[in-house]
Every structure is written in structure tokens, then in C-alpha cells.
Amino acid sequence: MKKLFYILIILLILFVTSCKNNKSNLSVKNINVSFLGGSNYKVKPNKGGFEILIIETDFNKSNLRMANELNDYSPIKKPIMITINKKNNIVNLCNEAGQEFALGVIDTTENNCNYNCKINFFTTDIVTLKSSLGFFPYLHGLSPLGGLSLFMRYHYYTLKIKKQNGIVLIIQWKYSVHKYIPFGKKSKVWSGDYSVDKGGGLTKLKIK
Image 1: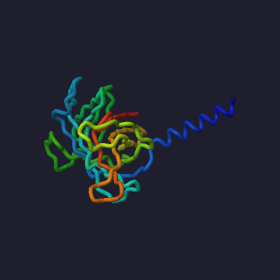
Image 2: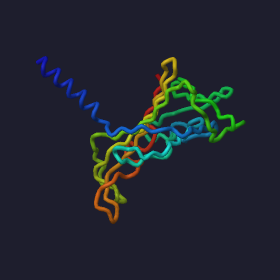
Image 3: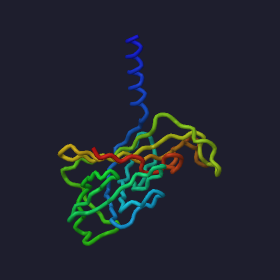
Image 4: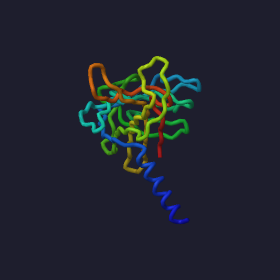
């Protein structure tokens, strides 16, 4: 009985670790923040917002087409609410629970900026941005407009910022992708990111 239990635990660990594969490291070009307005949802509007620009790279084992930018739009039923504020030159991100994380410092060229202000990460922060493809496909179903696959896979982007004191910000975006044969071609390629089903934007934000 114990052997069976350990086998099941091992299989569960293998299943969980294999749910995301084809990982690629990406680089943040720059990050812009706004202190006015934000995404409007049925629950309430965000106060401010952010936009992360990604450096284009040819290094991609899975040949996935990467996004050029990621932002604070959250398409899930209970959207992730954020507040962006500034204290002196420091830009802070607050979640709905009131936890605060210092994102960076307003760039010296952005005097008295309130909208699309460029900020710089703290030099002591460890910043990583990764792309990963869900291992298992899911049933998307027939598309009313056609052109989409019956089965799709989730494509994740995960930004992690770690402070010297151990505090970590984790932000994750989720999109849907599928393979298709372009007109005039013989082999399949990956589609771009689709905003369908439960994907299409910001789905996780943690400060721990």
C-alpha cells in the first residue's frame, strides 16, 4: 500500500512539473506606468496601470510567437485589481489586499509625468521574464467565426521581481495558441497569442 502511495506521489509530481514546457527566457525592454485612470471592470476600475515592453529575440526553442508587450488587463471573471502610485520618485504597485511593492524609479526624463511614464527597475532587484507553453492541449470547441483549432494550448508569461530582503512580486499572463498550416506552406506553425476562453491577459499577481 505504501509503495502504491509513493508511486502516485511521484506520478503527481511528474504530472505537475510537466504541465508547462518549452520555457524561454525573455528580456524586459522597459516598463511604463500610468497614475491616471486604468482598466474598467464591472467590479470597479483600476487606479493607474502598467505596460511592459519585451525585447524581441530569435532565441525560442518552441518557435512560439512572442508578445511585444504585456499590461494590466485582466479578463477573468474576478479581475485582478491594482493601484499604481508614486511617493517622491518611487513607483509602487498595490494589490487589492493593500500589499505594496516598489516597482522602480521614475526615469529622470519623465518630469511631472502622469501617463505612460517610463520607470527603471532598482539595480539591486533580480528581474526575470519567462515564456512557457502548457504541456496538455485543452478543448476549445468550434469557433463561430472559424479559423481557430478545436484544441488549443495555454501560453504563459511570468514576470518575477525579487528584492534583496526576499520580498517577491510574481505576475503571470495567460493566452491561448494553436498550430496551423499557413497558406502556401506544408508544415505547421504556432499562431500568435489569442485572447480566448480564460486566457488573454493578466491572471495572477502575488506579493510574498
